[in-house]
Length: 199
Image (cartoon, rainbow, N blue to C red; front, side, top):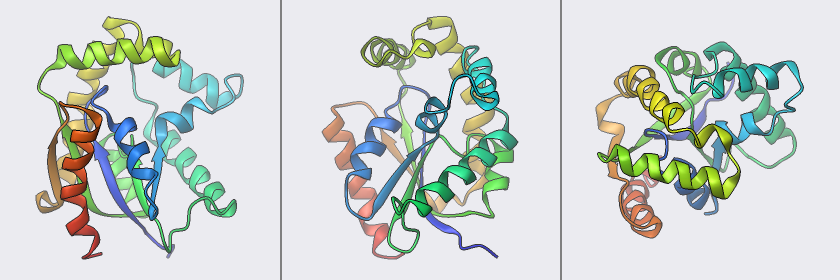
């Protein structure tokens, strides 16, 4: 039996700030931020898996579960081999996985989530604006088209939101994602710090 990685899951709709908050938390010693979006975007676009990813993301669809979990496992093994992530001393901040109920079930073998940060934003128009701004700033064409963005919200509601039901409600913390980055980070830390002491 492989060791399960102690993990905190960052869950929330597109544009809610998971990546931003994950990066800030990941800069704190003892946390390692792993974003599946960055993992996919770093793929060789001409490789078989890279072409497959582009085919799905350009339509606002999720990459198939088996492909995502396989790639994630390879990626984590490489991070450990390169001594960038240590399961013994680092808490894994997972951003973008699991993204569906089948992924949550497949990941049970590998991760031991003791907390879920559920970023909540009731203003969808605000999130659409955030994503269009991000597309311009970061050159992310999959975030520029409003119809693709709104499709991603539909996919989130259908496939990712039910992931929360796969976990004990006691480990889920709803965090208001509206406000400055610092305000949201403080809300997250005030929820996370007491939990770290019990791990």
